[in-house]
Image 1: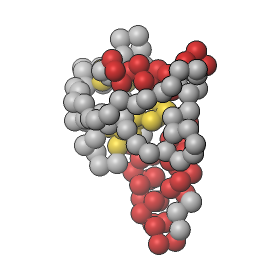
Image 2: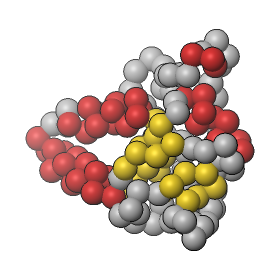
Image 3: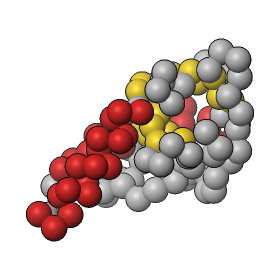
Image 4: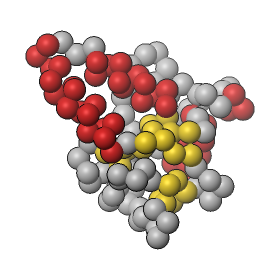
Length: 126
């Protein structure tokens, strides 16, 4: 995986619902951009601190996937559920493309948690 984009548009009034109650009062502003990261010998990636602090405020467990086998995408489980609902609600002219996106994302994707050194173990197929 070459990059780690942690940006996106999510349906609903609050695009990044905070699951971690400890941080619920402060405004949540996502970092922008894509960062390069390396996979270590144990299949882990190190999340840069700016992104890790943002992710920790969202949740403690994440859905990691790719849509193109080149770029890793990290979603909180709540945001991934919102994406799935949006894709499943597509009208007939976009239903096939939405189904293809979900198939690829679920084929490569899996859950992960971040350790104290901002690392996540990649799902086996990634």
